[in-house]
Amino acid sequence: MNFTAATATHTKFNWRVRSLASDFLLEDTWEFPYEFGAKDGVNLHLFQKSAIEPTMKSIYDGSLTGMLFRMRKLFGSLFRIDNNMNSLPIPGCGDKSLRDRLQESDFEKDTPERAMDISTRDFMDFRPVYTFENETLHELSNSTEHTLMHYAWSPSGEGKWKVRLAVYIKHRTAFSAFYMRCIRPFRHFIVYPHIFRKCMEHWEARNVSR
Image 1: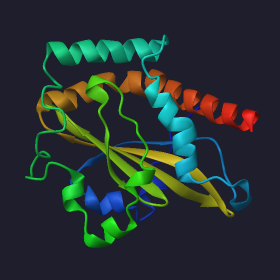
Image 2: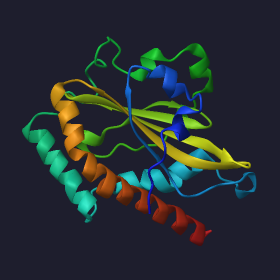
Image 3: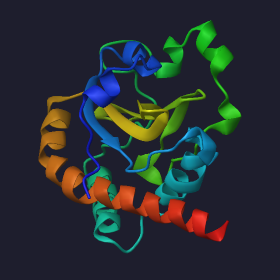
Image 4: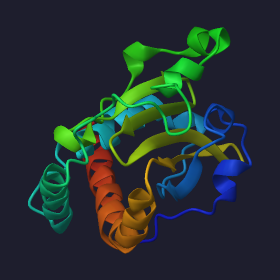
C-alpha cells in the first residue's frame, strides 16, 4: 500500500504552517487511506489519540523499523547529534521554537489540552507547537536540523476528509542535507510504511472493540 501523497494535497490549502514555516523545506507529504464523512463521528484529534499516538509510543518494537530507530539512537549518541535537543535556535534566525512566531489569533485557536503526545525516548522528543481543530504541528530540533510534523484534517472532496501528514525540515549543517538524502529510501520504503500500517492496526482495533 502506498501512503505517499502529491505535494499539492498539502500546498493547495492555506494551513497555518505554510506561512509560519515559509523558510522551511517541505520534505514529504503522506496520507492515510481512510476517507471520513460527517456521519462517521471522527475528527483529527480522535484519530491522533487512537492511532498515531499509540504507534509512536511503541516505535521501539521488534520490527525492522524498531531496529532502525535503535540504530539511529546509537548513531546519534556516537556523533552527538542529539546533544542539543530542542535547545538551539531555528537555523538562520533567533527563534528557538515555531511557537515564538505564533500570533494572538493563533493562541486563541490553540487547544494544548488536546495536543497529541508523539514524543518517544531520546532523539524523538517532539513537542507541540499548536493544536487547532483541523491541524496540528509538532517540532523537534537537534544539532543537525529542525523538523516539523504537520497533521491535517484535509478535505478530499464530496464532503469527505483524510488525515494527511506533511514533514518540513530546515537543515542546520551540510551534513544534515546529506544525511537526509542517504536515509530517504529507508524512510520511504521501510519506516513510514511501517508506521502507517501500525496506525491502521490501532485504528481498526479500536473500531472492532467498539
